[in-house]
Length: 156
Image (cartoon, rainbow, N blue to C red; front, side, top):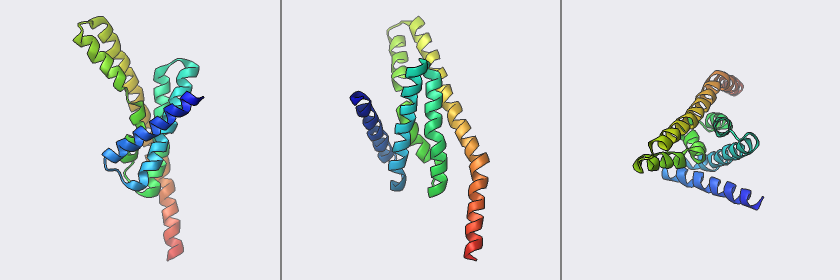
């Protein structure tokens, strides 16, 4: 349990500092980092319970991106800014490193396996980001438009 808390706090801090390095709007940093923490927590739980890192990557990315879409509309910020910050803990950097190391050491069989593994993992993330963006545009945009229209009518 103690190790999990350390991992999650580290995840939050990594997302926060990544957001700072992007010069993201200050009002989005804390929440976007929390979405990164939530996404990574979902990844850990799904990966532990199923043993499938691809479905864990998909569900973790979805858990980080869909709330990011909602929050971006609430604070009127481009969703990509918040999504970049929230998915950074899930990016397969170690997998990419292992792939390049295998090829550098002329272990082409293992390198081929690693690159396919990395591509499937990245593809699962890309599909989750696409689905959350599509859901945001199809479901949330009309909802927020109605809310804004009601606000304008009440003012006028």
